[in-house]
Length: 303
Ligand code: CP
Image (cartoon, rainbow, N blue to C red; front, side, top):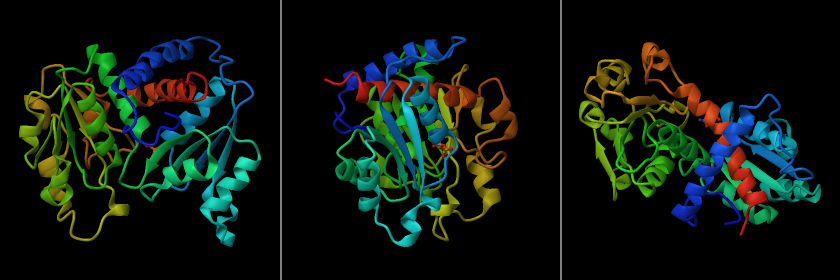
């Protein structure tokens, strides 16, 4: 595929190739000189309409590690404030000979629009509630690094499932790679239509975690939430916080994941976030290698 907007037109073989190639990129990042010439002469533009720390920085570093030029479009300081449309903005940037776009937007489908307006390889860095494919790839990669493969693993994702593009992309990718996924949260934050082959839903966090090889905590996305979804915060913490007590029935060597940003002692306890099961900073580290692999695949290794 020309773009990575979601996983729909990506074969499992190609998704595995991205993860395989991330191993090679990790080795580049372990060297004293962390640079290869793979994308020399190409220009990558990051276009973020929503805030980001991990995704934007790791994409920009990933592109630079492969010798691409990088330009960062910040919506808040752009001429969008003067009434310019998304289409005119992207057509303007494309006139500067941009070779690829990395797009984050609060509207589901915005990355598709950028792909259409630019005609250039476009990577979805999170669109509304819909998809965050590179986050799911780095999560899958982190689990794979731990266990060797995804097949047969049980992954529990706990928290605000309703507003989570991370949960949606992970449910699709992890099941495609042979894992089973349990999505868990209070009923108001757990849309029933997310159940499917390999994906079960439960409002019981203890049941979700039982036997899990990986437990992922998700942030409460209050910025996207209508009143009434959450109810009482102390009740939420008592029922759904990922902490040492909840993890008692997980698999003995279960790992803990969080896509970030974390709200410590809310969806995850601080001691669990910092504890021996936590792979939160490994996820961050792997994000750079996985994004190098995605950029390489789309810009060099096509066909
Ligand atoms: N996980 C994630 O997408 O983090 P950022 O919002 O900081 O990019």
